[in-house]
Length: 159
Image 1 (cartoon, helix red, strand yellow):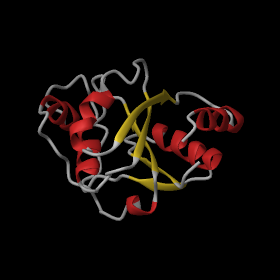
Image 2 (tube, rainbow, N blue to C red):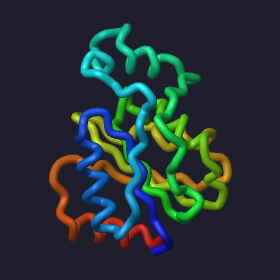
Image 3 (cartoon, rainbow, N blue to C red):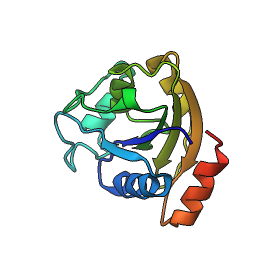
């Protein structure tokens, strides 16, 4: 496989665990996408229409600020991009991340965690934010996946 980066956003720690396991299995560098203003428990209350996450997800133009722009994207050919599924798509901070770097000629493989939904229309919702990149629907990485399972998935992508 080409040189890979696992970049991820994790609001509660679940996606972070999956990303770390994937990076280990793929022999990839790991990078955490962090918001400039961390999300609080109240911010993540999807049942509150006025919570920060609800407001952001209700506005397709929302682009939460990033804590830094230090992702080593230029050094990698394949980017595994992970996030929790919010409202059946990627959180808008993922659009912020994609729009902050040049992904031309790179392959982006999505992975996500969720309490009950799949990747939904995540890839379609991210394509405009990474022109020139090939975005692949990856898979859900819920629960405990063995290193062997993750290696088999990565190798099966034939990147």
